[in-house]
Amino acid sequence: MVSQPIIRPAQPDDVAALADLIRALNIYEGDRAETVDAGALAEQLFGQAPAASAFVAADAQGNLVGYAIYSDAYDGKCTMRVTHLNDLFVTQAARGFGLGRSLVAAVARAGRARGAQAVWWTSLASNARAHAFYDKLGASRTPIVAHWLEGEAFERLIAG
Image (tube, rainbow, N blue to C red):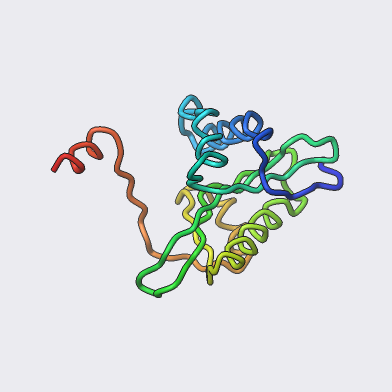
């Protein structure tokens, strides 16, 4: 149980615990946990040219029990700035206390402060629990299919 949870921007001292939470999300979604590199995470969140930002949820003892990673984006079809919610995760023990909603709200507020007019994200088609949560927020479902290009295919495309 989480008592008096705190939602706050992630700090460099959070990186190790945040990396552990990302590993937990990877395992939850059936992905490999070993792909998480705490050093890369620190550089990408707090380095010279941050690629993303994060909020964390901490319990009363300061332990991280959830997080949201987000980045600025642009929607050309709607010609507007948007915020992309890259990842959202709350530990099993901390679910049901409003932390997920609070994290998404923090991301939306941060996006608004940066000029965004919407927040968007993807979720696994098989994650019915996430879909129910997002439906409760009032989120719309879109027919978009996400695509991922990495590794050899990524390199081949760059090489021409």
